[in-house]
Length: 65
Picture 1 (cartoon, one colour):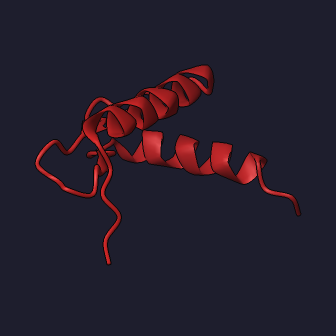
Picture 2 (cartoon, helix red, strand yellow; picture 1 turned 180 degrees about the vertical axis):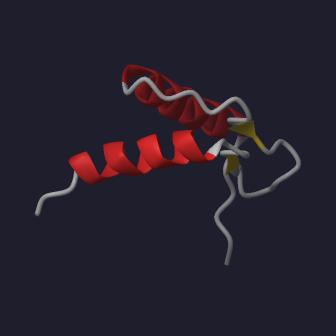
Picture 3 (tube, one colour; picture 1 turned 135 degrees about the vertical axis):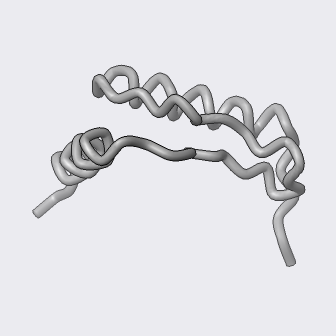
């Protein structure tokens, strides 16, 4: 059974992610919510390869190795 998410939860999650990415110096221009989804999906969108590499590097920095 799919979990239902309301629009305000989806928008809040999007803004939390946007703020965290901004603090890391990363901008995803297409970041937004998929308002047509009953799952409250967050759309990350398309990015240039250099942004994808920076995002991957930031995620790796947060890993406990």
